[in-house]
Length: 232
Image (cartoon, rainbow, N blue to C red):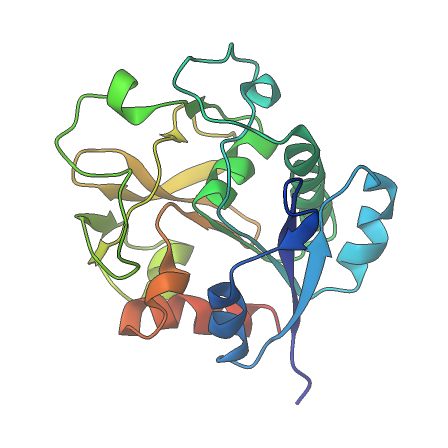
């Protein structure tokens, strides 16, 4: 049986002058039978259709804040640094994968990019915009769990995780504000903050936590295993 080829975005880092991505994403996918193809972001978006055609699925990983210009908002003083080149490339990559009907898994920033790509908006900074006692922008330990996520039944995410709720790590200060059209919320933190979204028809799922950091645990492993299976 042929292994599915899953594209994994590699971000450009100007200081180091290289493209890079965390190895945990690669291990989480390889451990469930996928081959990974790194996709370096860049200004050359004309090559995206050819790249997507080579793939059976795409993972949009974590990273820097999405520039508010892409969701028609003024930049808050609490918004972190953005990379317009990375943002523009990944947004077009998501749209092209949708056009070619390729499965997409978005993680942390990846969820936020998916929402923005389809017309949604973001809260730029949870502490200054949302009243909550839950810890979201933490995670010095990859496996340390900070809050509970409740997963909606009868959703694609519920099938991927095979769980009604789970404790997750958390390392974000932005989150979904206005949900994109044709999407539904598939998971929330106990404070109401969106932790999972998915397209109502296409195989597009986003999670706000970092399952790749806990890929040796049952539910997180199931997420990657079932995503890889959906790419076959």
